[in-house]
Image 1 (cartoon, rainbow, N blue to C red):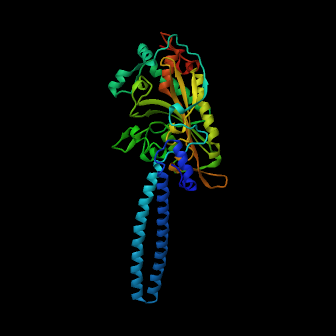
Image 2: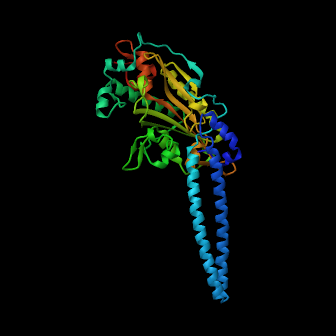
Length: 422
């Protein structure tokens, strides 16, 4: 959520920044300014009425003590009228504050100045590319490899639940476990604390990280309990410290978690949903950092480099893409995507997004730290996939299948138990 003080300071600059994102109703900023002015007028009116009411209550007491009953009764009636006026103004103020919160929740984050201009995927900028050899003799799509080896059963997964819920079997299931353990081991070695969070969250948690109201149609909802299945471990992990003030000297907090992830992926269709390209349930290891503002962009680069090291160890060709302003997620101020090359499809597949949200999430979460002077300040929050499994598995199958088995990268041998999958 954008801060009112920042919007007040330069509303035209905020409008220009939102226009970079392609956010059409920039007039919403004017609505917010008008609503904020009305809120402050009502606050002033309430404070004046409260002050008058306090003085009148004291006057009633004084008149009764002096035995001036008739004047005291009249003053008491005036005091009662003032209390009713206070209630009326406070009700109006509550309504205006609720409307103002709704308007603020609708605004996306402001892009960082270093974010490229543009309105879609075609305008994203490739920052760097890492080449790696493809060991497949004749690369084919991963769903063909999976069928040939019997390691992923898409049809029975669909029978159990529906399309987009793959059933991993034999070596496929074993590979999932190996990748999860590898990713977690590397995150812990890099200084991240492992946590094991709940996989269902309440509305306050989903709203705090920006999933609500923006991604309401993408989340699975348990209506009887008013809970949401998590789309990523970012949601519960970032909410660990909601409504807390952290000691500044202990920042940054670095956390990692494995979780299954659930996404409705409404509107997805075509070739991009074949096989593991886009599924409704998948596994992922997430890294989350809570930092001082002055550290956050250095940490963003470090988190991106961590994801790159994982891909290098897996021997996969990849590229780092800086998302343009119009392609950023609602909560992000800057995002790098890591994409692997899947030789069987001849396509780049996103396997990680690493984002700096600055204070967008922490303002909603009321998550702060004490600065060196002891004053509470909003933290910056960051998160990234390290990594998401489905497209990693897709690339490993497509890039390393020799017609009989999949040659696994050496780094996975201790976790998988042998050098190949068949």
